[in-house]
Image 1 (cartoon, rainbow, N blue to C red):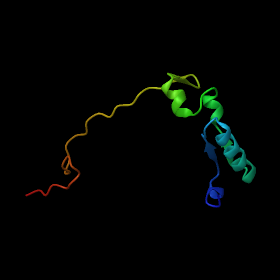
Image 2: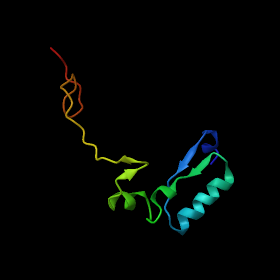
Image 3: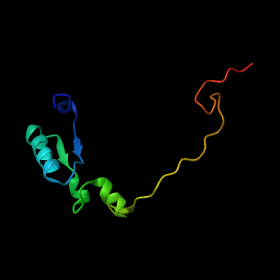
Image 4: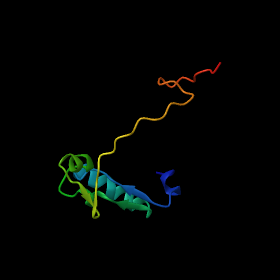
Amino acid sequence: MKIIEYYNQVKLYLDNDENGKRTTQSFMEHCSNYEDRSNLYSGFKDMNEWLMNGRKVLNGQTIQDVSLLPQRQSCFAPEGRKVNKK
């Protein structure tokens, strides 16, 4: 808790169950820089359950799956080892 006090803002995305609410309340009583963000996924146990249930709109924007495109070849081998140039 002492480390977190140095942050300007801490957003809490804890579970919407009894334990998550109790922990959120405890944090928020301890320091004023905490913000409860669990209302984003109200009606669900946690953010993962909310996302898994197809909630694809957040603040008017569509949530999209992200896939990474292949990277161009570099001086590093696919296994992450550096390739020595001769």
